[in-house]
Structures are given as structure tokens and as C-alpha cells.
Image (cartoon, rainbow, N blue to C red; front, side, top):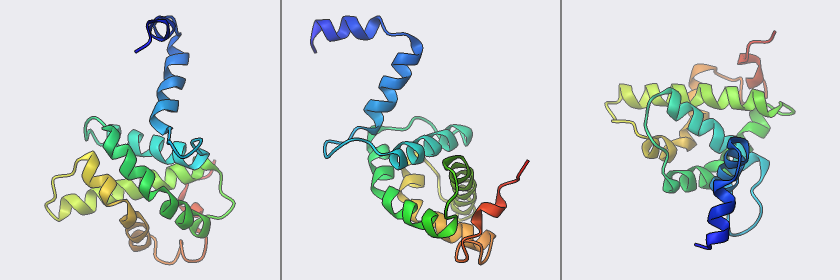
Length: 145
């Protein structure tokens, strides 16, 4: 690594380091990180921390990135015109339901297992709130006020 780059990184403030970390975690060789990638990955990491699942490895982020387009398509139908904060709350609810579903099946849940099962978020949300996603009303589960 370039010594000048190392020196510059050491001189960064905590906010600059956090921004650099987010950039590196969301960087893709094919182009710029999109807003959807960043909020999905951040929501996933937040829920893994809340569920005490451990460290999120770069390979797990890649799995989440791979499932992001499918999740975005689901959110476009399930809660059209919703803000990112609303989608994050809904995704967090879906991840919590998915975690409980996997635990009930006797699966030892890790960040990798949860990431591999991300396509099931839509089905666990539909099971918990029948018809809401299909009719574009999933944002109604988020408490207003």
C-alpha cells in the first residue's frame, strides 16, 4: 500500500473514516454504488448487530448485493412511493421474522445464512401480513407518528 495513502488515512476524522468504510463496503468494480445497495446493506448489518449474529464478512456483503435487485423489485410493489426509512423498517421487520423462522426450524443462524435466505423476506412478510405486499400496502405496518 502507498505510504502516502496510509498517512492520509491515519489523519482522517472518525466521520471521514466512517464515510470511507461505507464507500469501500459498497464499492463494486462495475460502477458506482447505488443508493439501494447502500441502504439494503446498512439495514442488513444493523439487524445482524441487533440480533447479535457477529461480524459481517465481505463475502456476506456480496451475497446481500446479489439479492438487492430482487428486494428492490419487491419493495417497488409492496410499498410504492415509500421513503428509504420506511423501507428500512420493513426490511428490518422482515429480517427479524426470517431470523425467527429459521430458528424455529432449528437452523443455526449466522449472517451468511441470513444473507442466503434474503429471497424469503417477501414470503415471511406475506405470511405475517397477508395481502399487504400484493396490494402495495406494506408501509401500513410502520407505526406513524
